[in-house]
Image (tube, rainbow, N blue to C red; front, top):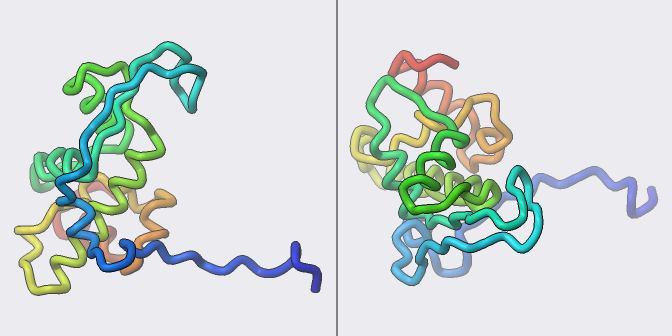
Length: 153
């Protein structure tokens, strides 16, 4: 079999050497940035002001979603852009930070923290999204939590 025809291996994202997912959420060296785009990027035109949030900002946002309600990554991006004086929020880092927040919350659950005390990421992670399929603990958890809170699947 040629090198280009090898089956793809599933890549499992890990928090990084010596760090937990929770450490990544709470990293005090991370600060948000609002920058002017030099060129078009994703759904944003050149010249627009784009927020690059932090995992902590995303975590705080997700914690505000009431029990039994859901939101979306698109709504998070719009809301955070307004809150931080930008026109857009970076779609790439937003997805990465939501993954970090989700993994950190599940990490806490595994350490015995009750589900009602962790960040309720299942309220914003769409069960059909690519992110849900990438979570290290499997997609079923999000579906089960949404069912418990009677959130549409």
